[in-house]
Image (cartoon, rainbow over all chains, first blue to last red; front, top):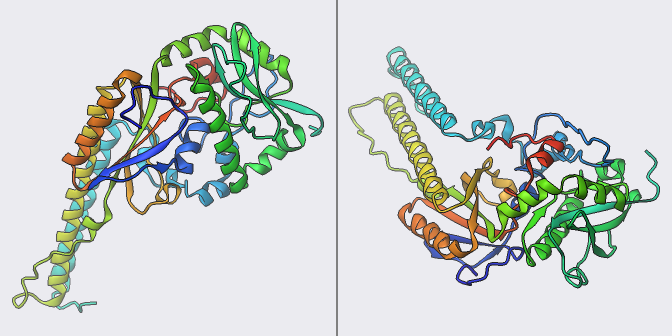
Length: 124
Length: 269
């Protein structure tokens, strides 16, 4: 489909490029949800609704999201642990790397300590 | 709020929607999807029963994954149909007005925003690119145990440390690759947006999603963009690169004010 000169949005398909081309797959639910439910299924945050005099009944969509249980069912609980969630900017990546590096060092230190303290530790 | 009567569900806004475009389209509420014109714009709408689409019932439905799946796909499908006829501003799921008049007022009052949005996405589509780190490489066991001289405990710890260092290096390499992929694709796009990586369960895959980007690309550069994705995939053999689309410009069409209206959590980009 990408080779057509006219690209018509709507008929979505996924193409994977790893070891060559695999066939198109239907858009997964996650791809659709993160688009139709605002920008990404971002959780957290309350719902500010300021509609002037326009009477909207249901902008409260984040509810899906506000509902932790549903979010977990969807497997979208990464906000609990994923530092990318907060924006995914370069700064975050760098921080993540830095933190990673510090943690690795700390682990190494601790392991060195363990080695010295218990040379004949049993294997598992 | 008593769930009586009907409301008007909005799918998308466009400059115009051809008369027959929506004739055979299935709507979320089982009613006909139609074009509502106001303020020099047209919205694809459907009259829905508040018994199902009122605030409280919706709340409950949204907790139901099957309902959500079906409804999201129907909504998306209608948006896609409208997008097939010209530039479109997709509405988010479950935007329900009390009646057609409310929609008409919204169109009239926000005409400027919509016009700007429509202009921004004219002759452009959204592509999704996700990059996954392949799990196989992670599992590859390759620790030459310098056996003999070391105690089993020490050997274990050394092995463990080597594994950690290796994993760390791989994660860093993945992050760097993801950044590079994004940078090169962004250069071909009119606009780009990073989303949080998808959880493996949501994506139905076991691989770790390390980049989840959306790119607004000129229609005439579609081939070029796809070729770039292929080239990047070939360059990074340890990663799997997935291209989805073309999508209606969900990630780029929202007028700022509309985004603010619905709370716009991360519209800063």
